[in-house]
Length: 597
Image (cartoon, rainbow, N blue to C red; front, side):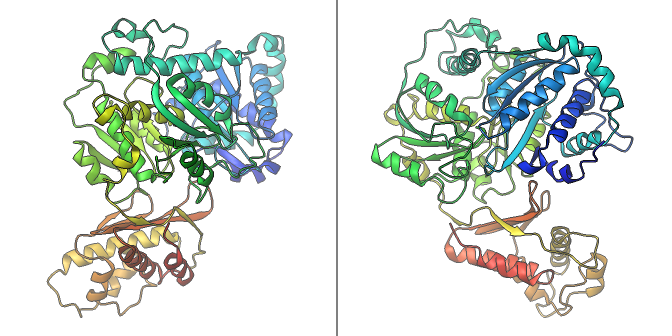
């Protein structure tokens, strides 16, 4: 049996993803067998696994286990999805084939059955990259569980032949598909019900139990279409198959660009957060004097927007706007939220929490606090956020990250980063009667928010560390914690007092200059500096912030810096460079050279 050593790098923090050369026929077939073991409850955690309480490792031995399977527009995704479907069906699992869908649509349909689903997608990555995402029991896998799936590939296939032979006669009846029309209609109707519940609550009271149930019919009178001219950029991704119909259902005037599904991505990588990637959208918004421009990534879970003037709204500001929507429209009573899924109780008296990732701006916590929400910083990764939300007892009403993933948690729809749904929530909020003239220009809102100058989320080569078991980021975190403790303990000492290098040795920071004075340390970490090490190293200064962390999806460091002015930004980059210089001079030079957006 192949060892699949080359494929180990495909198994990342959130999903399976990498160069198409590694997606060989043998690997895909073995992956199908591994998924079959997982969904049939044969993939058990190791004794030293820390996932004993995870739903993903519970037994799934039902004879009627149902898996929904879809794929994105990439060349090869369809074939991989079909191979996985066939292999799973041979193991006796019931397969519902969705065809070309967004990742959130796969999640939506998984929710209609048992919460199990697979989609073959590499999201926003370049065309030569392939990938797979999946759900088990309504949950995305943890990093440990993704690695566990890889280890299953290397195990003996001795049981596979007997299992397949025993279930071959079931294959034709176990592998079925839904019509494209049914898939789209149910999804659109479920979203329409959300807005009926929000904006016509009295009329929709009798249908509350049907929220998120696509097979029930909407009996309310439809809401009037929004008086918006909207430009939508699908970037030739999976949203191309449904965006026109979905947004046409809610908006009077929809203009589409790059809406032909094409796995060659002729207009560029399907990533709306790339620098200058929204130039065409900006031009089209200005050309048609549209109210808003909306862009989705390749699998429909990332959102970026352009305002009336054709200006890109920063992800930080978009996160704030969507959080405001979630807070303003959260259910007012226990019945609104709890009765839908028969949850025990939800206290609407508690301050709602808003989750944001460590790369978001220093202004965001205060803006959220001004909404009477509790800001909660999280490590980067939408899958991590979803897991945190599921354990929050509905106290987290919204979560978002700088990369454009946004999640509503109000029991009205799937708890997943659905970019099309998030965009529609924003449009409806902008058009409500409570706002000026029943229609509020994005420009009027965003221009009132604090200005800042920032770098993009920048990738840097991973430095090679010598003579230590700790990575550079870990060494930097230890050094920063040491400096903070030192400065707190020596607040009254002279600026010329030397740092005790014996303590530096204790914190594994022996490469730091032995003649660093307290004055120099106080420049690096001024009074009032806040340190967070939940995901790399983040420092918040009075007039900006910086973060340096290890990427979850590639062998790189990611960095972002922001300041209230260009001088503040330069000062913060200089501080980070000085902190990194003792560990890696080349990295320090690259940090200083990162340009402002």
